[in-house]
Amino acid sequence: MARRIEHHTTSPHSAEKVFGALTDETFLRDRLAAIGGPGATLVAFDQTEERTSYQLKQGVPAEHVPAPVKAALGGDLVINRTETWAAGAGTVEVLVNGVPGRLEGSFTVLDDGTGSKLTLSGEVKVGIPFLGGKIEKLIAEQVAVLLDKESEFTSEWLANRG
Image (cartoon, rainbow, N blue to C red; front, side):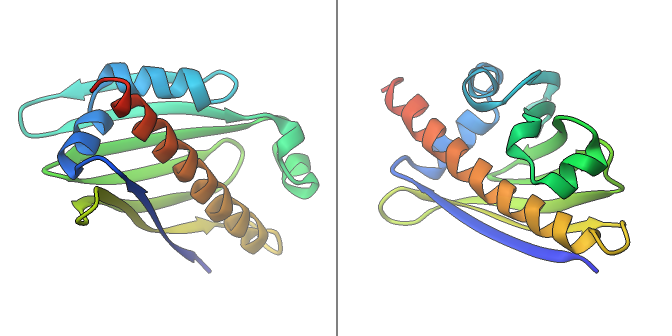
């Protein structure tokens, strides 16, 4: 069974500026350096006039992973994330090392009158009997925490660039 996820973050900056940051290679490298965790790296980046796509590798130290999940993984949590953005919307696919499952979803970034709102709508599915639901819940919770941290970083990053 899969777990639905919908998470919203807000920014005092316009959707255009947030979208611009989310499709900027320097921004992505800065964000990974600040909050990407162990071994964080921008694996690939491709940009055309119509779309931007990239792959990120992020890490969560084993000491921050619940014991049952840590036992299944055998170490740090390594997240492989692929995003494709075009015209203020994007898609995301997240794979986690050692876990037979994924998160798939879509992003929108829209002006909301006082700034902008970024929304992730998606689904987490983990195919492990008995533990799958717990891991899905953990992934959904951690994605929400990560998106909140990324939103805060994005707002600060944009504020520092005028």
